[in-house]
Image (tube, one colour):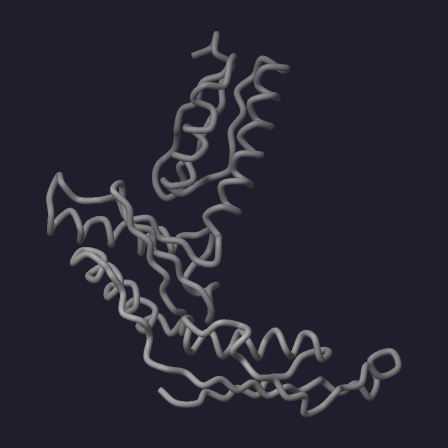
Length: 224
């Protein structure tokens, strides 16, 4: 591929350096950070109370070869192609990292505009995942693998937040003896809450309402 070059600004030199490296690796994810050369063009000025501030500017260079060949199954190649097409169609300019094991395939979007891939409350990333699983099931039937799609670690952050909300609702249900309705959630979010509280003593869960406004209700076990 030759040499890649990225000129990036930041509030200070450290931020500009980090952004420059990120931009090079967005264009060529297989490039190691240590292989990126950095040149500070402008140190920048903070200014007084923001007046007269100038951003720092850094140029990054990297000699980039062709991407390494991947040892992927035919299914993984197909899933990668689908994910890359989605990123291009949405205009996210993200690159795709993919891992495969006996149970399934995990697709991770990294770099670029991850917000547009995630969507409001994760609706876009969930739709991408559902469509990927539908495509794989159509190709392989019951023998298909589960496809999990994430963007910048959003799924893990989502699980942590929902787990906290579920546990708090369970504690309120037990202490008050009253049902606790959570806010409306996507099917993926509802599954996470049901799974988190499945073995929690003293409560049970159910989903109520109609899509797209369905939500989880946490009930004291003796009320179920």
